[in-house]
Image 1 (spheres, rainbow, N blue to C red):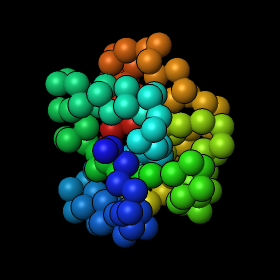
Image 2: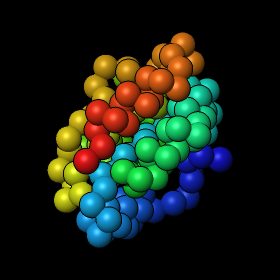
Image 3: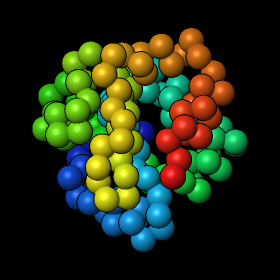
Image 4: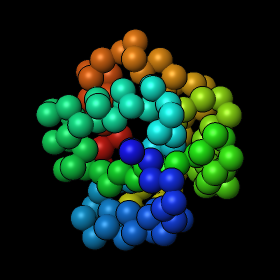
Length: 128
């Protein structure tokens, strides 16, 4: 269970932003569902040894359950993530909550056809 189905995503984002501000990190919002195979692959890549080090050092990660495109849609809209185009979908926020990046064009849908290095590149690009 990567995406906590009954979590209060609004509260989790606020907690992540508070932590990010204290630790001078960025926040990654990971929109997806436990039913999504590509989301499972992304989670594996994020927790690859090299990527995990980058992730923990530079980001606070929040997994946001989208149900079957019917849960937390307000959050996806707020951060400019069109989940109807596919998941996983990511947004990167500054430590103050400003959207620095949001996936708009099905970037995560081909996760199983990429490798850990593409996630490493993404993390390096968006780290503070």
